[in-house]
Figure 1 (cartoon, chains in turn green, brown):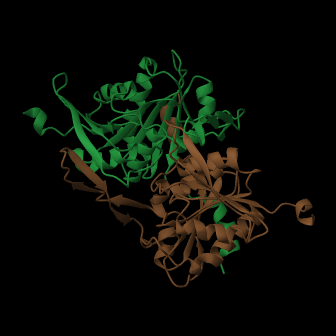
Figure 2 (figure 1 turned 90 degrees about the vertical axis):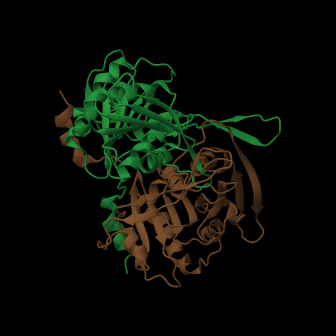
Figure 3 (figure 1 turned 30 degrees about the horizontal axis):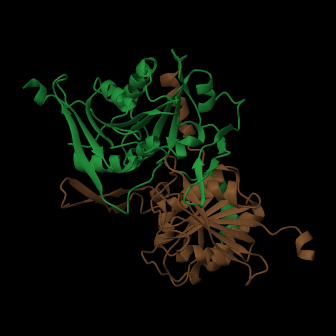
Length: 265
Length: 265
């Protein structure tokens, strides 16, 4: 009875772009249950590289996969969605969550989303969406190529960042992009700016028995400022967790005067 | 003979998210041929709401649709790609263009990409990709719901913005998001910041004969700052073309000190 009348625990919505069955999202759900009531709404399979894309040309489905109540006083619902990470957040807020989430966390992605990769990332697409809705949001990604990872080295940092955001909030329109290096022990947390970099040599042409020209996306990352020690990429290269505050307002304010001079009659 | 030894005209790569057959990209190709040599590499069908998403789980195809040389001294090649707008730019730069493009233009999109819609826009995803590669890039979008539009009122502004960027360039990591209102005559060009806004009431649940819960994305735009007269949304509402300089560096520099105090040991 006491529990029902007490202030509700924070509601934490969890999603990702690797699908609801990925190891990283299970890890995140377990950790977030220490901090609040958890709802998982995630793609029904992997949606890597989905960025902020949305499903506008077909309907998306929503299916309850699991409702756990036994091992915690607070339950954990897991929903699978046929759409993209951004769809998951949009749908969770409107059709699943019993109230507005206090926090949205996405990940833990298998693969880093540092530097320009943030633009292509479905993990971060979901975070952007929450942020555009005014909900504090964090994306967690691990620099690894493995499907099965040891997340133990990152648990403390995940809880620390999430606790901080639950307590202090974030400014409207700003979210966090957190990346971990694959190390047995983090050297610490570094607050960083997004590194300048680009992907190159991105295509491998492959033969096709039906003819035509076909290409697989691949690529090498070209880190454009390896010397600067204040970037997310530098932090990962030096065994630190990288925390980058990310803005939804993309305006380049420094360029406004020049453009005004050029275009205003 | 003279033509062959003269300095080459600028190379302009054109793409979009409505597909190579859309009216808007044809309009853009015709206009850009006044300014340079044109290559079109665009999706083989509509890819609305693709944002910066990339195709990583299947190969993409590239097909030459048309090579025109008759009506201009400079030719125009049109390629169709089975991938997303970002794939088109990546593939064009590596497998199609005879040299690095001097300018990438995307659009003219049927539908505006002002305010937060820039995040979901495939038109702008292509522009972001060019910008990340260090190529000056502009996205053009028209606030309309029609498939067939009269682009005459916008031709002068398209040429003016493109000519300015070809002449003066853009800073590395900044591109332009240009939106037009649907009007018989523009009141002028306004240089703007991105308006704060969000999409709400986004889902319509629909019955499915096979069962399950299915939803179509829809939504109403909630303009969060209608009074401010320096935003792209305001400009469109007042019959101006809106030019927003857009940054690829998403770092919220103002938040770095607070986060450093919270997370640095």
